[in-house]
Length: 201
Image (cartoon, rainbow, N blue to C red; front, side, top):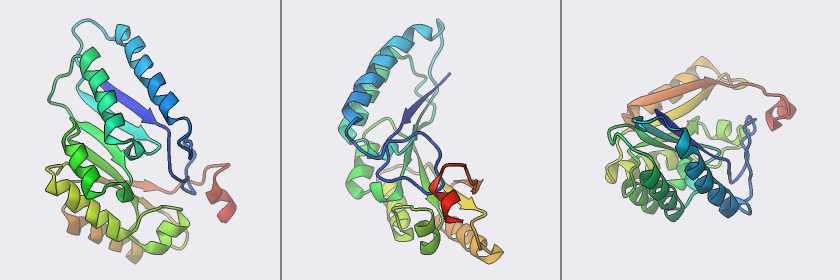
């Protein structure tokens, strides 16, 4: 069995996003308290003999959680849930959150896989999508994670942006390949009703 934890906080909202998120941190402590309570309550639903294999922190932006907040969650999981100890433990990160210190902190936790929402290596695309990071921050994040022993990485890219040519998309792919990251997720840009994106085009 697998465990998914949704962390619904973002520093800012991407123009294409229609997920439930909060862009303020006011509710974060209350949310974490509620998450811990739910982990306790849900434990009784786990069938006898079942083990948790993979754990995934999605969002939102889970990398807004501090190492101390992540430790609190992991302490609760390991106390309550039987784990195989062999599965992937993934956290979604924004590249600009992955400083040298944050990468080191992640390596001290059970996390063994990081998925980063890159979306594009072109600065104008990132501005259009209201992404906070730069291509240079992606490169720095990948290197920081590797220095601290986290090599199992995945990057997200988005295609189908207005005016995106085949060559611009291929430049994104070539840049991704140059990093030697083992996994890529590519998503077509979707114009969801009610998002900032639908008001831009």
